[in-house]
View 1: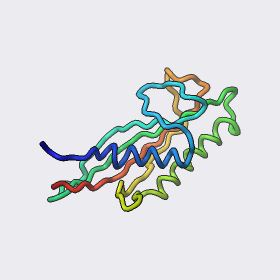
View 2: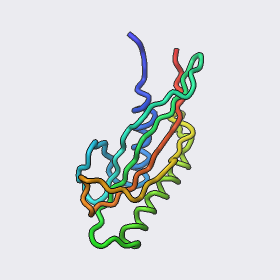
View 3: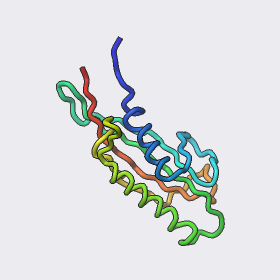
View 4: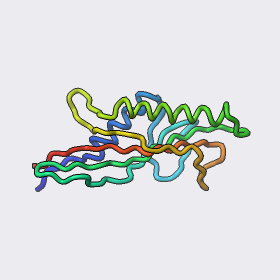
Length: 148
């Protein structure tokens, strides 16, 4: 039987979940479709796991995750109530990831070169009520996994 670790979960999803929860205090979910989870929450979607470099005793891989922030905001779309609050979340998320671009905790290595390479602020989906504003961030991080 081969030995392996669930790198996507252990090095990316679990630490990312913890970082976001600690910073924002909002619930984190992994819903595939839209499901109302209150007035504000995050959804995390694992997207890709891409081989960057094959080495003799390790692999370097990029992991891509979509982070969505949902916020219930009723009424006419205005800068003060709709635009500014979600842009603040986007900026804060970018800074959180930048400050943890090489993420380790208590001598445990999780990732390096973590980054938010794009943010979309004007997302509309058919199954989502117009009362919800969505921010979507594309997170990428690199992990070197030693293979033996």
